[in-house]
Picture 1 (cartoon, helix red, strand yellow):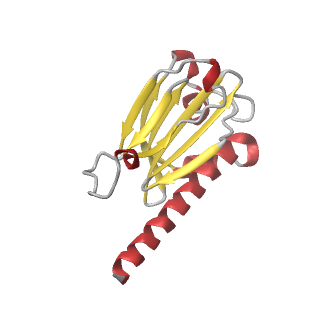
Picture 2: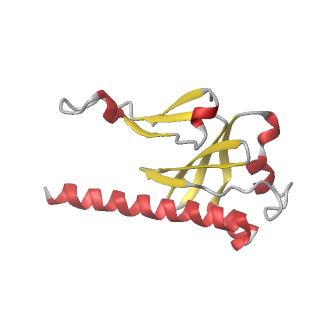
Amino acid sequence: MEDVVVLENHDEKVEMQNKAIVEMLYKALLGEGTMVKVSKLLASDLEWWFHGPPQCHHMKKMLTGETDHAKGFRFEPRRVTAIGDCVIAEGWEGKAYWVHVWTLKNGLITQFREYFNTWLVVRDLRAPRCEDSKDSMTLWQSQPRDLYHRSLPGLVLAI
């Protein structure tokens, strides 16, 4: 039984470290750090997925240096959650609602999924235990502040 507790504590520690790394990235993008610092957080072969209007490639422009991170779109997360190797951040600027899903391996960001003006639900598709209800399969879902004033297309992300 102690092995399980140690494993859970290890998982929680990794999740906390992953969350701290992603929060460090956002702070640097808001001008509290350098792009050199940002580049050290990202794998050189970062896998990138984007879902949204073509004109909303703001993060790509920042990370590639096409846009000055201090003058471009302000990615200021309103909520950051770590789930296993993934860190999910959401926020909004003006009328744009965004969700980012960062995957980390050994303290390095290896995958990035970006969703603009999209309602996202993250589900665990492993077989549920008998005592679990169907709702326990939902690990995270969007909470945009203006949900009642507009309709957003929905996606399910399975992890």
